[in-house]
Every structure is written in structure tokens, then in C-alpha cells.
Length: 83
Image (tube, rainbow, N blue to C red; front, side):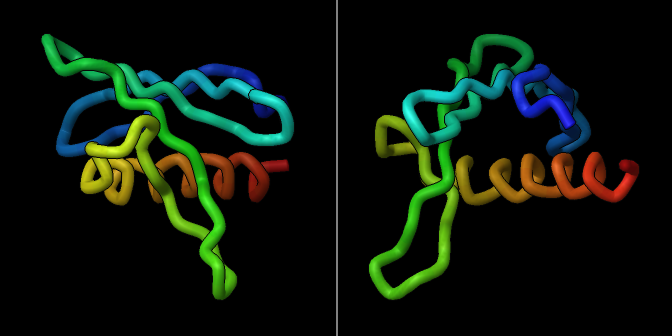
């Protein structure tokens, strides 16, 4: 599975373009929207008590990250299941 390949996800009936980038040991995802919405950059962060959550970079678009991040996770799970 090539984790660096851009891909498309559907969110609220629209196709969004996702570009994965590895920065150091972390992955960030740049999500491009149709129209005038600015791109969203998000990553998976660790909680102090364990577990992970999706967050925006910079902070401020957390609600979008919480909705779109799981779609990215689902995309990779589908790819892994197809192999």
C-alpha cells in the first residue's frame, strides 16, 4: 500500500482531494475543497491518557478535522482490506 498517493473522499456529497505528506515521523493530510474554502491540514494526535484523535493544523478547524479525519481512516482501512 502506497501511503503517499493522493486520493479522493466524499464528504457531504462532495469529492474532496486528500494529499498525504510525511513530516518527520508524522503524517499530515492536506484536504482541498471545491470552491473558495481554504485547504484543511490535519493530523492524528495522541492523547495523554492514551488513544488518538484527529486535529487541524493550525488549531481552529477542529470540527472539520473530527468529521473528515475518520473518512481518511476509513479510506486506508478499505485499502488494507483489498490487499
